Length: 120
Image 1 (tube, one colour):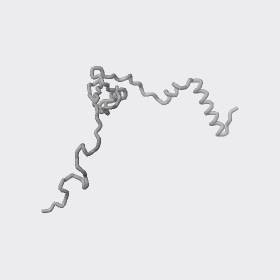
Image 2 (cartoon, rainbow, N blue to C red):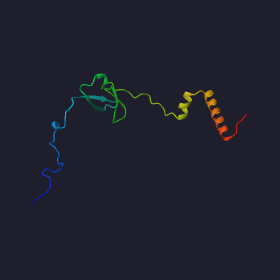
Image 3 (cartoon, one colour):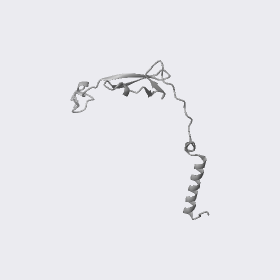
Image 4 (tube, rainbow, N blue to C red):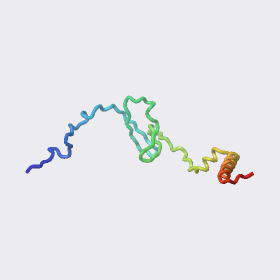
């Protein structure tokens, strides 16, 4: 009974030898652990030759979304949550009442001019 298929099931035709040594240079890595307020640990890998100042002190925990730090006994706390601001709230932060009134009057004047109703 002839199988007529590949001698090694699951391999591609022309696939080379398997193994790490055939996939190129493997960079040295260091593992850095981060902990959030709930005690969840997240491990990140960085290149071993990366300067210490380029490794972040705080990351966002992928499991909780909370900030996670490198000190297990003193994880970062959540910053005070700002309530949702509307567009109007942001505009009011940038403009005074007088500036708003002036801008409104200029916009109304342009609209009246376009419509042919210029007020005197």
